[in-house]
Image (tube, rainbow, N blue to C red):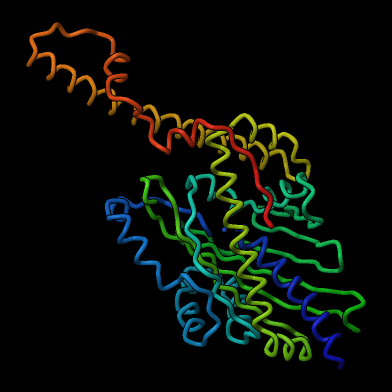
Length: 347
């Protein structure tokens, strides 16, 4: 086989596999339930604790650790068998680099479990030809428009882990026979407090790929670094875009509601849930701002009373005047949340 043809096939194969990883990564597990104990930990200690996952890895040791993290005992018998058939006969493994992002936990959970919303937004922006549609409560089918098809099943979901089982294939002029393969994507997440106090999460993805074609399997093993680079970059971009959606829900909720109303490739039920989640994020953001302003106002009032007591001046009733004496009390978070936001498409 000619080297150039092999690279071309592998690039297409990489796109096929990343297509499955890509939309499952949107799945950027990333569902988070903020635990009280962890929430009280110093955010610097939390960020330090994820150093071990900052770089991608395909080593045997990392793969063994990834397999041990899978909750086989909590899976259905069918899901257990599907996952075992891949991880026990894997052609290629990759742990994507961990990403720390700002995101509301409810919006993150929704997007992880409804990746078709993200793909539909990309389609609305005109930056993808990929289609992804829901055919069951936990099942989606996709097509990249160039010979690649993919079926995805969400077989496990918890506060810290989501597992997608993917079955994909390619049929086109880059390979004489149809290519088939399976992929297990385990998307892990961990709550973290960002340096400015905002809620965030760190997420990383383990991908196990099994190819049915012996020739393609050899190509994967030979040119694995190319697939690793492509998969890592796609995961990073997906994570960033999920964060952008969550931030837009907070800074420009009306705009996101309009976007939701224009999504034509999702079910009415999913659209309704997306709009409700967006409204919830906006309301929660407003409550946080009001709480911060209330604390600031309380401090200002107490300070004013103390000063007036020492100077024997009467206590006024205008809290705005007291706040103005403290200067600019808006935090960077408040300024960010009250500014206009827009989507930036992935590079």
